Length: 90
Image (cartoon, rainbow, N blue to C red; front, side, top):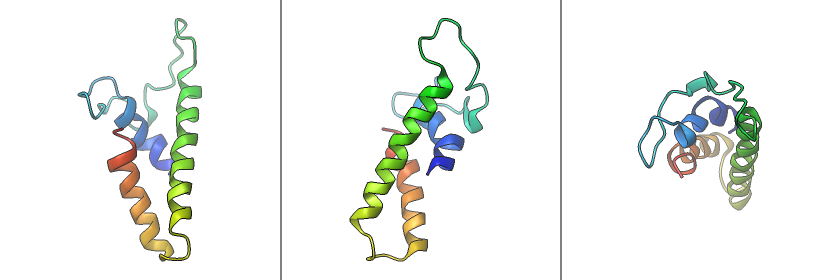
């Protein structure tokens, strides 16, 4: 989940050039995302890490809800798809 968040999720959730529901692709693979802005109160790299912790915790809670009821491979696929389709746009 952390790899998905860093490469795709951050730009889906917080990309500046998108619409109201899905962000744009200007920060895909975190390009232009860690520029230092002297007017910002919080560095963007710290914000990315902070939001990544919630993405990981949410996936862990979902995994715990069906632990030992599902095989590991399909669970990884489900969590990946759920993360990109449900969690990131919200």
